[in-house]
Length: 52
Image (cartoon, rainbow, N blue to C red; front, side, top):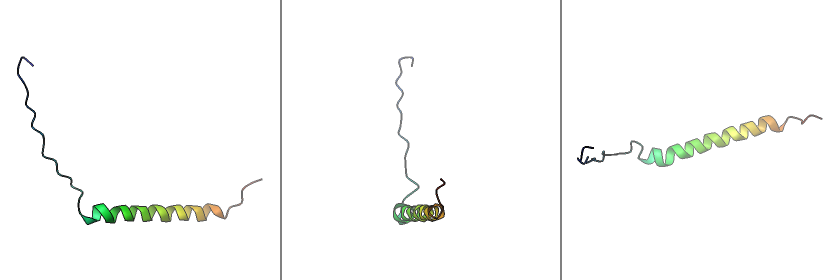
């Protein structure tokens, strides 16, 4: 750019998601919710007869 160099300064980055809740609590909670939802869907459709 017109013979000049642009020096880019990296922005400071800090993650807002840290701590016990975000690394252990939330993943376990999400896994439990999906496991229960899957089981409920299975129970809902398992009792149905397949058509002819």
